[in-house]
Image (cartoon, rainbow, N blue to C red; front, side):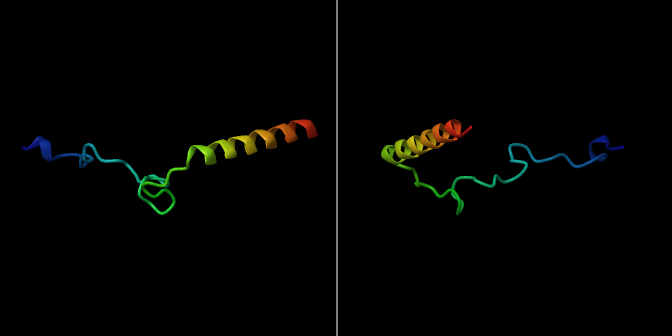
Length: 58
């Protein structure tokens, strides 16, 4: 009897279980689409200001 052929099929090795919703190269996250440092700083300052206003409102 060939015991290697019994049981469930083994999953492929080194393959992801699923695709990420924000994987590189998709419409939501294209290759080479990186924000500049100035844009990142602007976003961080806006978020800090929003948190500051929210804390003052409490």
